[in-house]
Amino acid sequence: MKDLQSIIKGCINKEPKEQEKLYHRYYGFALKTVFRYIYRYEKAVDVVNDGYVKLFNAFNKFQCIDIENIEKVLMGWIKRIMVNTAIDELRRNNMMPEIGGIPEYVWEEADQSAPADQKILYKELITLVKKLPPSYRTVFNLYVIDGYSHQEIAETLNISVGTSKSNLHKAKMHLKKIIEDNNIQEAGICSL
Image (cartoon, rainbow, N blue to C red; front, side):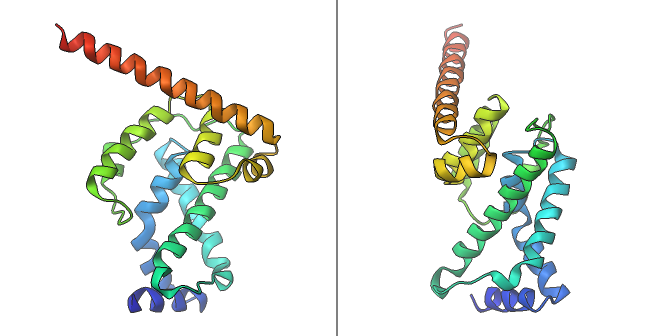
């Protein structure tokens, strides 16, 4: 806890050693956050680095009253900056996703935010979400995974609240169909 407080204080004071510590400590978390939006590894790494530049430039705005939960608050702040940076990148490309695989070794990047069994479920979810059309995938990520409200999504993506709700509903229906199709295929394989 004291170590993290020291790192945060150093980042506020723009100390390169402390910035480097924070970068390495949360790199895996940031990369996995960005991967929900950008699927090409090289581009995702660039977006994470852009996100860290924004983060370090705005660190003097970071505040945490609840010292007991400072890491959760910090991770929430990092996540929000990474999501916004990824969305900015998607906007530059007219919301077209970066197509490409996610290398297996990326899932092994250090991420202290979840236990091992949740990491497996997360990987499976991201693999399924990746199959959604871009507009559905973006709304699903923002609402379900990142906790944005429909109003925030509408403002972020410059769409109406109704469109956000509709895209979320359609995303859920697509995911349900993908899961049902996978279950049917697995049942067919098992019955052989």
